[in-house]
Each structure stands twice: as structure tokens, then as C-alpha cells.
Image 1 (cartoon, rainbow, N blue to C red):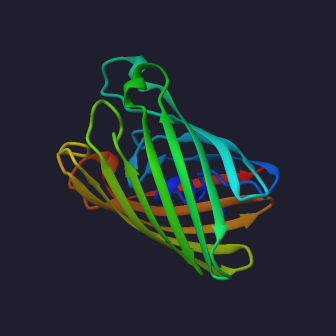
Image 2: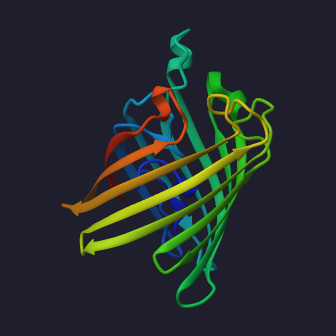
Image 3: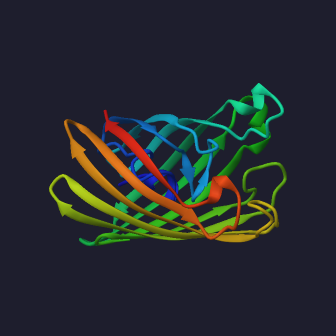
Length: 231
């Protein structure tokens, strides 16, 4: 199972929670030049340090926690400039057939301190068929603060180039009930093309990330480099 790359469209390719093997604890840690979530920078295009732990049960159920620094600063105070995102999740993954797997999960996003009003939940479902993953996300209160609900649909494809190298492709569409979630739009598309290389026990990832949102530094096309390691 994978607690799908931080929920179907996260950040860069490898900066997301990875599930434990059945009955085991696993962890992950990463450094990235930009924490991009569904194409939108969560750190004002600055670097982030991220990591998490998971426990997978033999039944296919799993629980975990993942955290990263974020920066939603509007330039008014140092409190707003530096904050943390901590995500808690629980889910269940199983194989429907030899080539089809299903993953259902619930996520609680929390932003301690000045950003706590942005806390919110998401319900996530994904179906993996061979190298494709199709995802659906629903949030009843997207990014908190009394915002309306939102849905996210996505398609991901992973291509193995050789034993220690792969490419990831992602496209997703986020649709919200309220205008103004991102630059006044109620819907936008994000995309990612990434190259991953495993060497000396770590994964090096280079991704091209962007959205169809006009203007705004945090939504423009950009390259993101990540170093990650599974523990």
C-alpha cells in the first residue's frame, strides 16, 4: 500500500508518507527545495524538511503521522512566516485482484499555532491498476476557516526506466465550492513530471511542477529537487 504520496498529488514525488509493511513500523525523511502540494507551494518556494512514521497491520489497515515546515507568510509577522504542518491519517489498503489495489483513508491536517484555523480533513480513495493510480479526494471544509467543500481527482503513472531509476507523471484537478481558494479561482489543474534515482540508500528526485493558475509565484511552473530516505 502507499498512503498515496501524500494524498494523490502532493509534493514532490518522494516527500510523502510511505506505508509500513504489514505488521511493521517504517519511516521516511526528506529535504526538498519546495514543499509543493497539488502544484501550490506551501513554503513560498523555500526549502522544507519533512518526515513521518507509519504502522501497517497484517489486515491491511495502517496509521501514520507526517510533518513538514510550511510558510504561509503575508509579510506581517515572524509568527506567520514560520509554522508547521502535521498530518495524521488512518486507512485500509487491499488487493482487489492481481493487478488492482484499492486504498481508502482519512486524513487530518493540522497547523499548530498561528495557522490553526486552517485545520481540516480529507477523505481519500485511490485505485491502482498496473502502473496507473486514479484518485478521488473529498474535503468538507477545505483548508479550514469556514471554507466550502472541495473535490480533487487525479491520475498518476509511474514508469520504471531501470532498476534504480523511474519517472512519475501526475495530473489533477481541484474544484472548490467557494471562489478564492487559489487566486479567486474555484477550480484549477496541477501537473508534475518527475525523475527518481536511487543511489547509496537515498532517492534523488527532480520534478517539474506547475498549475494552470495565472500569476502568483507559488503556483508557477518550477523545478523542485528532493533528497529522501526510507527508514
